[in-house]
Image 1 (cartoon, protein in one colour):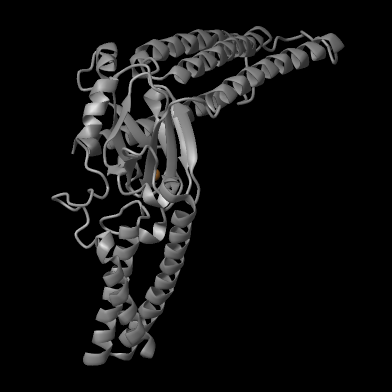
Image 2 (image 1 turned 180 degrees about the horizontal axis):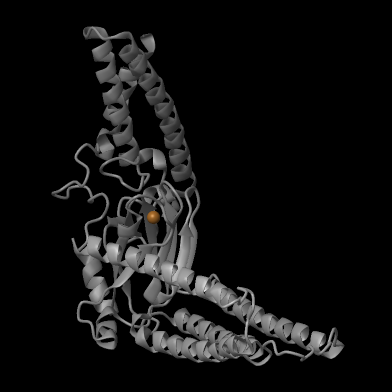
Length: 422
Ligand SMILES: [Cu+2]
């Protein structure tokens, strides 16, 4: 109700102003004054208003600047972030100078050189010195900004050496998953064809390959049975045949993948990435040790996302089909940042910074930066992707243990053979 009243008041207000303007116009016409006649008083008033506008504009600018200062990001939580902040502040100083210089000139000229009867404009068509000045100075300033920016960027994106904490950040619509290399310090190979409910990142191990084969075989057998025993409408039969063809293609590709895997294992032995996946940690938590260099490997399952850690001043696109990287060294722990910001609830947050779909806004994960000891303790409490043989809880129920792999494959082959006869 109040809203309707406000809208009504606004509409009536606009109408009243329009009517007043009309009355003013009519009275001036009655007084024999033409609409386009502008008195020297009008000109003086407008010129003075330019000055007033400038002052109000600057006051408002500073008010906004100080009023919303606390909404800015706190100090950087990472080493390279300090260099980036310095670069940004340097740019701000230049921007402020250019802003005040150009705006003051704009208002000054408009306020000072207004129209006066009988006063002729000064004819000043060209000045080489001035042209040179306003070309060379901005060019030099831009060159400094670009060189300084490139140098900072090169330092940030250097590959880095020495001991680094490797973490994979996997983006999909609409969440993040982290993967740690586990005890062997090596991330396992991945393939998107192996993605299923228990293997969200498609980690390739002998077990996950066997599981996926079994899944395909099961579905093929189920379709086979339906086609044999049920009376179905034609379009559904066609659909099931399409599905069968797809599943068979998929099985062929995973068979290729298995061959590739076995060859790699035969060549490299323990160093093969296909043997490194079982102890990986695939988790919905993101921790980093304080002051240790971290190498983030960023991947995406579906569309382009962006790994964004605003408090760390870190951002990198997550592009399907490739791995992008970002190297950084956290220098402020979560606990310290809570003191710095005066917010006991503060958490570093990993956001998606590409509009990637309907729930993009909610695609986030907390980052905990803690001491090496706390980090090691947290890490020790995590369950590997595939619990070692003999462990109580197997993360993937259907995953056939390595020893039974032969059986699973045989079953799959049987099912396929049955399908192929169709
Ligand atoms: Cu996203």
